[in-house]
Image (cartoon, rainbow, N blue to C red; front, side, top):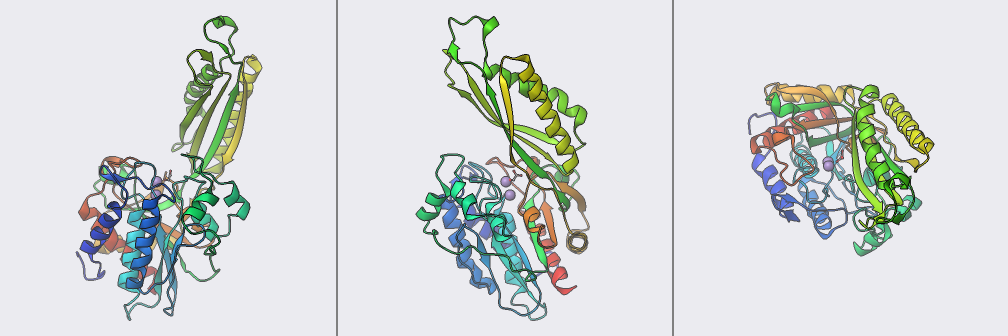
Length: 410
Ligand code: GLV
Ligand code: MN
Ligand code: MN
């Protein structure tokens, strides 16, 4: 412990993170898709820890855990997620849940701190079945029909089947009570190299990007790969490949300084080398913290599709399948993190936007929200080698708990 202000137990924080890493281990990371056995076991692990912090909670009807307190005074909600991307890192999600748990363990029994920290693990932040399903359910943004429609992107299992197999079917879903919390605070690894490359310890998040996602479908003509002359082919796969290159050539002229775009899964139909693909599909994502920039790029995408259509070989359809509003983090939360970092991390902090999506952007639609980052070694994340130095994890926990205390006592 580096300072008397925060009675954080760094050894306990690291032990908790390693306990979660031991559930669903994959190489040096974890493999915990939403509603997999290791994800559910991690949620149970959290439920069992809650009483240590004076909290009670259960896994709800969408796989969230929200531990609540009966202590008088203001309440701060804190948390993150416990499922992972496939074959990914051990800290993306669990770091924020364990920091929240530690804050609750330190602050809730403390008679000198008015109020309590309540702890949440939001389900499916990593979007195996949708996007932010758990936190969106908590703020009232997920209908029963949305759950009926949700399917696991890796194996097509329906969310209803997953909930039934997990024993969660029919359970009530936790819902946000307006006015219950003074706000929401989430900690996360940075997942980039900004902090590490400047030898900084704490990122004070100013905004979180919006994530817009598309299904782009190409329709050509399926035919024999040996007998159809190159000049007359309507190869949907080739049209898709050209389209990807065209995006990379033309987006830089229209994008903003921090816009990023990524092509995800590409499928060719039928995808056999002896058959010219008559159909092709790509999943495509754009991120920016300015919706106007994303709208401009979407217009460009649609006009590029129209150009391909006009050439007459293949039809292209652009369907938007996800819109995520960028979120601004609350100014007073940023100040609290910065002040805590001045007290406990030598002021080695930086205000910065988040290029990754986080549940805080959903919670920010109903309450003031803030986020704190700790450095990621080599900026690697969404990969099993993701890591953060132990000392940085402990410093982050101390700053997080102190920021919680400041927010509750201001
Ligand atoms: C969240 O993990 C994201 O993809 O930004
Ligand atoms: Mn995450
Ligand atoms: Mn992630």
